[in-house]
Image (cartoon, rainbow, N blue to C red; front, side):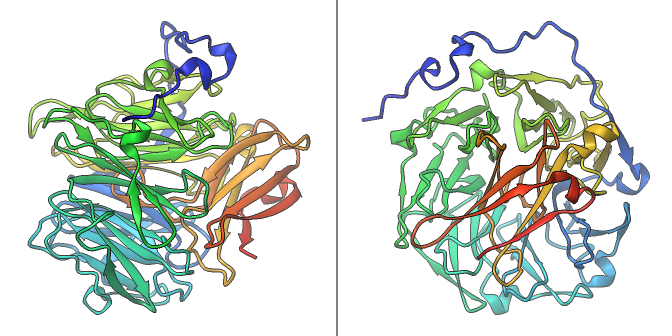
Length: 501
């Protein structure tokens, strides 16, 4: 029997009164973005994108997977991007990698790159980062070739809280697989049971929904299959709680299904919510604070049927509320055209679509990520187009006015040894009166088949001092680390770095 889901009236602020939150009759305001290196990035067949500082020089670099097997790595040279993939050992052709994920699997302080093979006859690749000077495929030695798989999302996560990164490999055509990191080699666990879900999975998002200190995983499943939410029981086992929570989305046709997922606290209540872009009507699960969720997509204006693919949260105007970019497309095969959405967050009360089909940002049909690549305090937009000869990997600079751009705070989370290995950790900001301002989670995968290793970005309504609270995942429950009286102005152009204690 399914748990009765409370109505929206009982879980959101009374001011909503169960009415549509945002009027849709006003003309949308075109966001101020400018294309970057248009000619360099106009390459058809661009699929997934993910950002990380691979050379440890202090700025973020861009990895892009393309049809035809090319994995491009653009080094960020003071805001100018140069493809250094070929000279560093990344492939320029070969098996297609539908997904790129950054993670320091061996804890040497240099972040490594994993690509999952799209075709079942091909093998996944894991590129060991040799001091920022070379990448070497070590997948066979690690036990991560992952055969008989059509890869979509691959996630570096520490599911057992033992301090190193494990791997979860979603599979579009067969069972998913979980690999435990045992001293730098990977052993498959739960094979044939539980979290080795046989349904066709495209998106996987890990987050601690029940706040017990262990990361759980939501699976967006395709071809009419029901979605899943596998609760991490903390003993190596998992339980699918999606049916009892009303998050399985059953009864879909074979043409419908979940494609991606994106975790974010859209209403700044301190709890992580979940957006699921679908072939079909999108869903937005609001966390009620008691272990349950309610789908509020229709009431908040994002329940559109737009053949959606990827989604990513980011506060592009620094008003303190995260906005939502969704890539989607329409049209017949080989003639698909983008139909993207940029949903502006109207103070947690609803969303307004600010794009039209003629908008300069309406270019994506696959991956999307928000990233402040030039560290000016405003989130820039990285979006992929894989279909048609007009495809490309587009980068848009956010031209937010300087005063508004400065109204932000960047936070980098590292483990006790200074390594980027704490995917899924959470950060909350509070004002001087103790009121929560915002919540962010270190990426475990979103935007379509990618995993960013980027700092967390907070847009701020003011530059007053804040309290920064980090929730680390741990075997004996969450560990909370607090920094008081943090002055955002001290971190303009750089990031507040917090090491786990």
